[in-house]
Amino acid sequence: MTRFTEALSELGLTDLDARIRHFPEGARTAAEAAAAIGCELSQICKSLIFAADGVPVLVLMDGASRVDLELVRKELGADKVTRAKADVVRETTGYAIGGVPPFGHRTKTRVLADRSLLGHDLVWAAAGNPHAVFPMAPKDLVAHAGATLVDVREQTPAS
Image 1 (cartoon, rainbow, N blue to C red):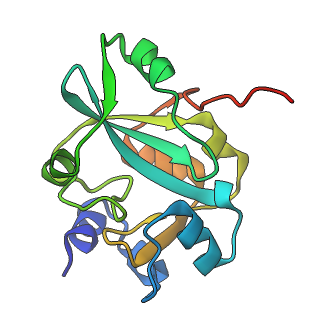
Image 2: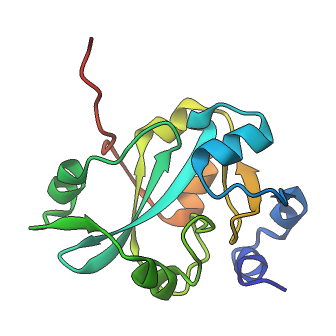
């Protein structure tokens, strides 16, 4: 049983295990996952670990967008927010970059979910490794992750 399968069991989400889809060619990036699934890039939920004043925080973001670190900093009241290094991601979550799920982590961290995820009926997130994803309604995903809904998406300037 994988760590993620165990986490699903602990959360009472054993039915979700049957909906996990595996892609031998990989779904490490949001673009790879969207192509493999056949969905819009924005339907991918990226699970990104940042360090806010050195403390890990998880940000859930739609696959077509980037996180605005300044907005995360303001949201958390932190002095500095940076992308966490790979070893911190693995230590915090128990998973490698490219396979970090939105919940079921090794340690409890603060979770922010960008409101853009709610623009879809269904989103896809990593299931513990770079070759597996699962579908879930965004509201349920946010609830299971214990996330706070925020607006931390980088805004692209109008052309």
